[in-house]
Structure formats: structure tokens, C-alpha cells
Image (cartoon, rainbow, N blue to C red; front, top):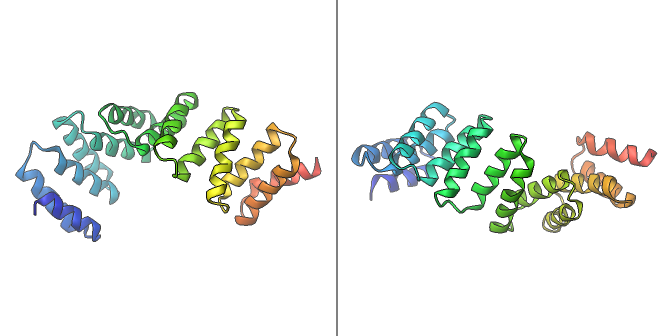
Length: 217
């Protein structure tokens, strides 16, 4: 069994020390192969060691500028550290390098949204939802963004879809309630979903506040 495989097995067992040791040996054995460095970057990122994770991802990219996993891993690192514009560039490069996965499109969309580029983010959220139609986190985020862009009917469909799969989703109830409140005359539907939101999550003060405001209005 080669060192990268040993390291991955150790990771699955939760043995970070053994995993790091194996990936280090893999990198020493094949110093021109980016895989060992990508694995080291992932381990240190999981352990919260940003500095070392960044160093190993950068090393992998220096060996192969189209190493999609390294670009994506470094993007995640920057996103976590709120370096959203840099993260967006890395996710975009990872996609161009062939990383056609829902998470890459989703994270690119999230990075653009965090960088106040919601309009640019929209097609990436859409693509992520097409690639992973059962991922409720993606569908919810897409629905919320559609609502923010005042594409209310499209947003309603996404939020209803989320609730069909997960009726206890507080965020979907809250956002659907707000959508009905601002874009239609469906006051009862707005009240129903807002009440569901603060019933599921009693500390959801915003849902309760808007509910009371509609009731009093």
C-alpha cells in the first residue's frame, strides 16, 4: 500500500498524526507529485493550521497550476479566513481546471456574494443546484439569493422545494414568510411560515418581530 493510501486510511480512522507522517513520506518519495502536498494541505486545514495548510496547497499549485483539488482547498482556506475575493479567484481557476463539482460552483457563488457581487453569484448557485439537486443547503442559498434579487416566483419555488424535503427547515420557513409578506398579498401564508420559523427555533427573534408587525398592520 502506498503512503497516500495509508494516510487516507489513517484520516478516516481519525489518526491525524499517522496521516501527516504518511503524507510527508509520500511527498518525500515523489517530490514532484502534487498529491502528497494536497493531502497535507487538507490535513492541516482540518486541524486549523492555516499557515502550514496554505504552504502545502501553494506547493502543489507550483507543481501543477491546474491541480483542481489544491486550488479548491486553498480557496476553502481563504474563504474560512474571510479572504473572499481571493477565494473566488481560486474557485474559478479550479472550475476552469476541470473541477466540475457542485461544491466548487457553490463556494464560488458564496465568495462572490460575500464580495457584494450577488448578480455574478447567481449563475454559480444555479449551476450548483443543477449538479446537486438534492443538496438542500445549496437549494436554500439559491432560493434566498433569488429573493434578494427580487426574482420572487423563482425564489418561492426553491424555498417550497426545500420545505417539501425538510419541513423543519427554519431558514426556509422564515425566508418564505418574508417573501410572501413583501411580494404578495398572501398575508396568511406569510404568518404561517414566520410562525413555523419561531416555533421550530424559539430564539428566532426576527421571525417573531416580522410576524407581530404583520399581525398589528
